[in-house]
Amino acid sequence: MSVEARPIRKLLIANRGEIAVRIQRSCRDLGIETVAIYSDVDRHALHVRYANEAYPLGGNTPAESYLRADRILQIAKRCKVDAIHPGFGFLAENGEFAQAVAAAGMCFVGPSAHAMAVMGDKLASRQAMLAAKVPVVPGGTEAVADVQAAKKAAAAIGYPVMLKASAGGGGKGIRVVPCAEDMEAAFLTASGEAQNAFGDGRMYLEKYLLEPRHIEIQVLGDLHGNVLHFGERECSLQRRHQKLIEEAPSPIIDEETRQRMGEAAVAAAKAVDYHSAGTVEFLWSQGEFYFLEMNTRIQVEHGITEEVYGVDLIAQMIRIAAGESIADCVGCMPRGHAIEVRLNAEDPENQFMPSLGTIRNLRWPGGPGVRIDSGVYRSMEVTPYYDSMLAKLIAYGSTREQARRRMLRVLQELHVGGVKTSAGIALQVLQTEAFRSGQYDTGFLEKFMEQRQQLPIARDIPDDLEEVAAVVAALHRQKTAARRVLAQPSSAQANPWLLAARREQHGGVCS
Image (cartoon, rainbow, N blue to C red; front, side, top):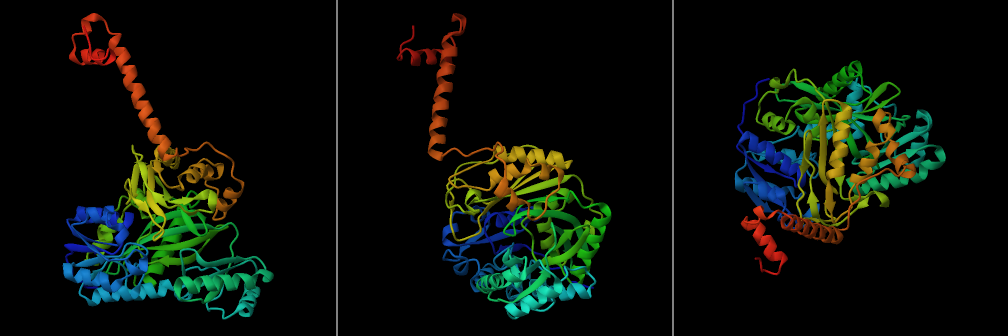
């Protein structure tokens, strides 16, 4: 396949927060200028400060700002950018937006609208994977029209079943149905949820797998027909189908299974002529794996794959959009282990509800093997308008245990004042025997929240008390230092700094 290279010198980032900052950093490494866009509440955000240019969208809600494809394209044309990177969320998997970007003569840093359409529809993607001989979870390939049709399909599959929205994502429109008596309530709730979230209430059924693991494979494809995979990520520690802790590689996948899953992921990508970065998600149960879905964008947890494989996936996406080959990535080998904790502004003690407020006394951890991807700064307002994720905490080690211990240190050093976060519960999970041994599944976190033991965790001090404590500690240190000065022998008292200390002690008089 012959593809004409199109150099990218200026790129607009159609996103916000930590992913916008992450993209900006890769652009700087590549010598590419960046254009930021922002809502009213994001006027002082880090992605605005770090960009070469920044332009307001107006409004605060996603519908008023980051989902305004027309406004974003107007800004892109005015700034004469060569490309638009959508990040994840918002317009990242919107085929119409991708087509509009291309029609305007700019590169869309992502896959084709066709790939998005096929993989964005759960039923269409199941049909495509069956045709490509990729193993899928046993279940239907057509939508069920109503409760009675759902009951009939479930009886054929065998309970328990998973009721899922055809156009779903982000954990919405999904219910586990253990028996026929529960189907009606589950169907009505899930269908209504899907209609509200996606404008599409169609449902289909899959067999509910026992003690499943959520394993995903990172793929990268270019416009020359090359597709590579970069191993797997273990994403089973989740609540309400939202991930909390991820690691790479998975502690349960052996080399033979890794190779088979990688080959299946590559086949899935090739089935839709995929180019750019993407993630093929599988469920693993009782030694077998099954296709779940494909996310046609960069994933939140891409950083742990980057640490293990030594590749900049964002930079590769930009290079692919410019028409370059990924041939230089052939032969990238994994080394070591990486763990990611999603730092969310939410209250684990209150069903992980979002926690709003002003960020105070921000202290990021550091040291060997630590990476923080964040768009957070002190005095930033955490609002109800966007996702609750504040940062991604990543710990890398030569072994899984070293990575685990480093993440423990990260969570113990971390302090985010002003809002509640998921850090404490993540610290508890990392200390469980289930995590140490790698023997956990997608249901572990919910069970843990119900029955967890009280482990020692770093608890936040209320901000006003912390500030008072800091002042008291500083005064104590000054007083102790002055006493030491005054206790020095007379031969040292000619030092002007020591004399000043004596004057302060004696009301300004020193003989």
